[in-house]
Amino acid sequence: MNYRGSTNPIMREGAFRALSGGRALGAMTVQGTFARTAILLFLTFAAATFSWSNHFVDPAAVGAKLAIFSLVGFVLAIATTFRMEWSPYTAPAYAVVEGLVLGTLSRLFNFAYPGIVAQAVTLTFAVLATMLLLYNFKIIRVTDRFRTVVMAATGAIAIVYLCSLLLRAFGASSAGFLSAATPFSIFFSLFVVAIAALNLALNFDFVERVSRFGAPKYMEWYAAFGLILTLLWLYVEIINLLAKLKQDR
Image 1 (tube, rainbow, N blue to C red):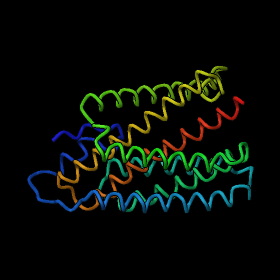
Image 2: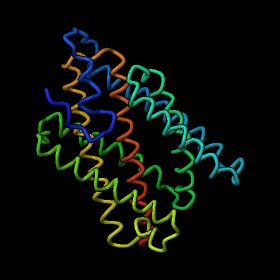
Image 3: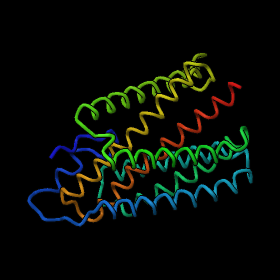
């Protein structure tokens, strides 16, 4: 079986190769994975709601809190990626931390553009439902060529974002070209949203095939963590796109 087909860094072939070894582990199921995903979504929303409600208690500390929570989330993501057996504990912790980050960011976006968060959440779940239907009815078929194209596009996006961060770090005047409401920036955001959506198809395919592979039960949390990563990426890209469109009016 070929499990190379996910662009999500935690959903990779090597992550599951060691689990085979001739052992009959088959405890992981597709239904169990989506149930774990629902739990992680609930934790994310609960933490985001708390963060949203307490955002302006100390406005001066918002930047520091975002930096700390983002760093903690990054550490948890790395730990989950390389220690899969920890995922029943690290994945929920990651969901809570990222919920705190997204709740604060969402409050900031909504302060600048009232109603934008409700629009972004609605669109995110609409895209999720659409991709699930397209995948379920085989309208989108995850082939090797499909995987290669989406992986290449995702890698290119990561490089562009990295270059933008480096430009900002060195104070380049052009560092904000991705956030400005220019036609190019809006087109780029549309492209990124499309690629994030296509990553969901890769995730669905990966979960389905790995569940047949015979992974242990804790891998449901690990795979759910991968799905959450993609969904959070999609939400952030959608709210960025909406903000650009509102700036352009």
